[in-house]
Image (tube, rainbow, N blue to C red; front, top):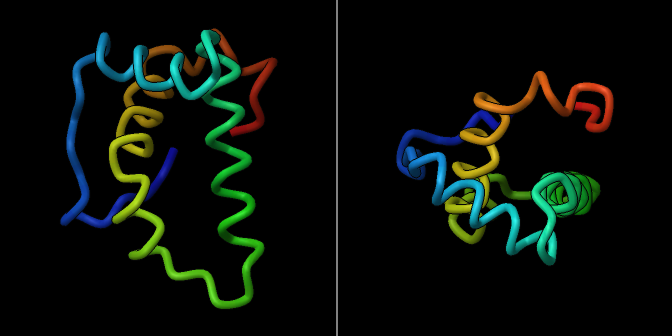
Length: 82
């Protein structure tokens, strides 16, 4: 789960979150979750990583990720390393 700064917090519906993660994954929900993990890992690998800048660009996806994680994380625990 992402610790999203309050300015960028939003709670999409489960359906909206699933749709967003599925689109990010090219049609797969789990693939979307993994894709967003890669985006985050790429961000934090930067020596000058600015989380505020990250969340200003990726706030919708981060919020969607959190909703999916909260609702379906137990199903994916063997597949995703949260």
